[in-house]
Image 1 (cartoon, rainbow, N blue to C red):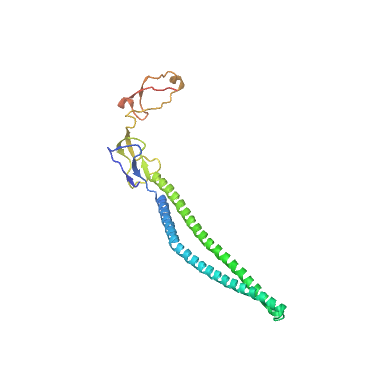
Image 2: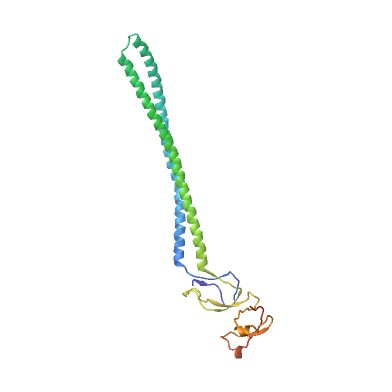
Length: 250
C-alpha cells in the first residue's frame, strides 16, 4: 500500500480515490513505453531533417546526371545529323566514282555507333528518372512507417496508463464516513483486503436486506409486514433488533 488517503471522520464519495497500490511491473512497462515513444519521435525528427537532406543531395546528383546525359544526347544527335548529311554526300560522290565504298561503309558504321550510343543514353535517362521517383517513394515510406509505429506506441501507452490507473488507484464504491482504519501505507495487502470501515450514507442511512426463509414460513410473509432483524453475529439480548418492513416477497 503506497498511501491511504483517508482518516477517521473523513466523508468520502463514490468514485473518490481512497488509496494507492504499488505496481512496480506495470510502472516499469509504462516507463519503457514512454522511452520507446520518445525514441520513435526522435527517429522521425532525424528522418525529416537529415533524411530530407540526404534525399536532396541524392536528387541533386541525379539531376546533374540527367543534365550530363541530356547534354551527351544533344551532342550525339548533332553528330548523327552531320554523319547522315555526310553519308548522303558520299553516296552522291560514290556514284561519280570520287570516293570508295569503304569510305561510305565507314560513315554508315559511325552512324550505327552513334545511334546505339543514343539508345544507351535514353535508357540511362529513363533509369535516372526512375531512380529519382524511387528515392522519393522510399523516403515517404520510411516516414509513414515511422508515424505508424508512433501511433501504435501511443495506443499501447494509453491502454497501459488506463490499466495502471485502475490497478494503482483504489476508488470507493460508496458514499459514507470513515469510522475505523484497518491498514496503513507500507503494509502488503492482497486483493479483497479491507482497508477501513465505512458508515454507508449512500442510501440515506437506510439498509436493505435480502433474506432467505424456509418455504413453510415464507408463505406466511406478506408485503408491508413489520420484521425484527438481528445479524447472526449480534446478541439481540444485548443490542436488540433492527426494525424493518417487508417490501417485496418472491
